[in-house]
Image (tube, rainbow, N blue to C red; front, side, top):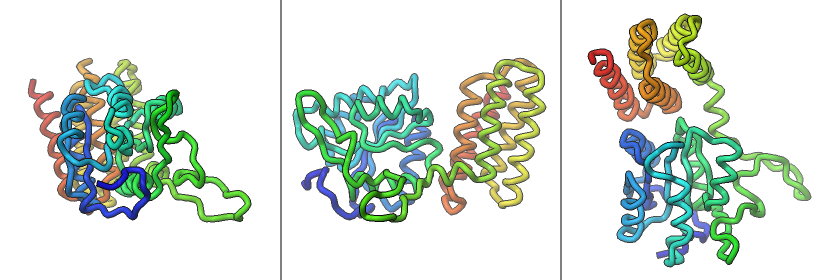
Length: 293
């Protein structure tokens, strides 16, 4: 099989991808987005052990590690172990880290662990394709030395450089699809809602009214854009907030799951109908079960 660090055109259909994620819902969603990009050869693993076994048993060209603080699968630890593999091909595999907590420190820690590229949640399909293009078409040179094993943390003519180029004159900057997606009206409202939910969990009296107002605004946007899946998800979450908050029964896992699902619905284009309906239905069932308990 070819050198995973040799630049080549991205051909999604035969691309062999491993998705490592301890959350089953998240694994399935990433798989759906990959399939929408015409990637059909997808393996998935819920643990370090399973991911390591798949890498040995199955041909793999790109590894996607979806990870959040507190996950049972420690994404950075898994990547460090991958970079220590005796098989030179395995330790040179391109790795994309997917996380909602994409801070400067996360990027530093990820680069030190051996991450090639980063992708923030909620996942934009265009942004995911962009990262795949980076690791396949313009992979970082691999450093294999006594002091560091992993992709070069600096590179010439980087695919993720957004500023002006020197000497050669101006060339068009690469458009960051994550930044574009985050500026849509619905994403801005959901960002405000996420902040309000912090106050809601702290039982601040003004938080409930603010949350209901933001949910109403979000539903109005969903109706205006004929986004039935997002509207259904928002209605389910509003029902939970309206019942649980006055009773002092707001639960952190429910809030976190609902916000993540709503943000992912907002990030997925409406032509991803099957994936979007699955997200909305799963959220509705989870909230109905919680309210019935």
